[in-house]
Amino acid sequence: MSWPSVNPGLAPTGLERLLAEPSLLGKTGRLGLLSHPAGVTRDLVPAAVALLQKGIRIERLFGPEHGVDGSGQAGEAPEMAADPLTGLPAHSLYEKTPDELAALIAQVDTLLVDLQDVGLRYYTFVSTLVQVLGAARQRGVRVVVLDRPNPLGFAVSGPILQPAYRSFVGMLELPLRHGLTLGECARFVDPGVEVIPCDPQAAFGPEALPWVPPSPNLPNLESLWLYTGVALVEASAASEGRGTALPFGLVGAPGLDAARLARRLNELGLPGVRFRPTFFTPYFSKHQGQRCAGVQVHRVGPPTDLLAVGLALLGALAEQGVAINPDWLQKLLGIPFTPDLLEPEQTLAHTHRWAAGARAYAQAQLQICWLYPRPGLSAFR
Image 1 (spheres, rainbow, N blue to C red):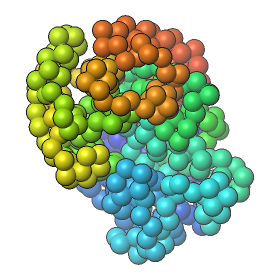
Image 2 (image 1 turned 30 degrees about the horizontal axis):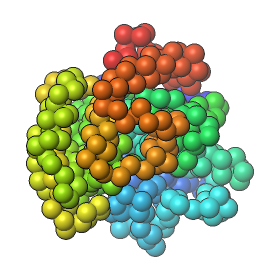
Image 3 (image 1 turned 45 degrees about the vertical axis):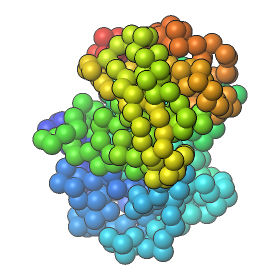
Image 4 (image 1 turned 45 degrees about the horizontal axis):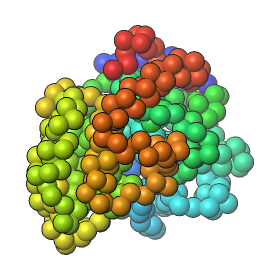
C-alpha cells in the first residue's frame, strides 16, 4: 500500500512523516533499518537515533555500499559489530550472496528502508533495494520504504538498460537518469511494496533539506551533477578525480597533453560547460601518487544533462591513447558498445536520441510506479 500525499511543508521525507505519525507502521514485530549517514532529519538527526527517540524500537541496522557509517570508499562496506551512534547490531548488505543477504534480512520481521538515492541507474543503492525485496519475499519479511526526493528531479535521459547488460551497477530496465524516487523504484520491482511518501519537490540546500554525502565522492550537489556524466570515465584508464578534492570535476592521466585535451573538448561546444587544462595528483584510487595531466570540468550554465560530457571525455581521452574498457562502459550505459560512442562529434546526437527515447519510455512504462504527479513532458529537461 501507499499513503496519500502529504503537506510538503511538514514532511519533506518519509522519515519525517513517520516520526510525525508513528502509528503508520502498525505492528512490526522485530524491526530493522537499512540506512546510511544521509538518512537524516532536517535537523541532521540520524534516522536510527530519531526513530529510537520517538519510541520506535529498532533492533538491528543494515547498510548498503560504503557501510552503515559511510566510511567505506567505492566498492567498500566495512563490517562492524555495532553502530557507534546507537549501539545496535549492524550488518553490511553489500556484496553478500543471495543466501547470505536473505539470512541477514530474516533476523527482522519488518525492515524500514531510508536511503538517499541520487537518481542514476549506475548507483548501487537501488541494486541493494532490489536484492532486499527479493530476499524479503523469500523470507516473509515486510519492507517499508521511507521515501526521499530525487535530487536530480523528475527529468529522464540516457539509454534504457537492455537485460543482457544487467549488473550490480544497473539492475532495472530504466533510463540511465530515471527520474524516480527510491520508493518509486521499489514499486517498479514490486507494485505492492509499502512506501511512506515524501515531498518529491523538496529542495536541497541551507534553508531546505541538508545535503549529506550519500557516498564519499559526492560531497555536494555540484559533484552529483558532474557525476551524471563524468562517471563514465570509470570505463577508462584515466582518473575521474577520485582521491582529489574535486571528484568527477577533474579528469586526467599521467603523460597526457592537458592543453590539447581542453582545446579538443571546448571545440565541441557542449552546452553549459567549459574545460580548463589542469594537473593533479590523486592520493588514492587510479594513479595514486602520480602527477596527472588533464582537465577540470567547469559548469558555466544552469544544471543540465552532462551525459554528453562523459562521452566526449572518453572519446577525447581515447584519441590521446588512454585505454577504454568497453565491457565496463556497456555495464554503465546498459547498452552494447559501438565504436561511434567514442566519436566526440557524435555525443550530442547520442544523448538527444536517448533523451527522446527515455521520455517516451517513462510515459509508456514508468507511470505505473509513479507515486507523485508529473506536470507533463515539460517536466523533462
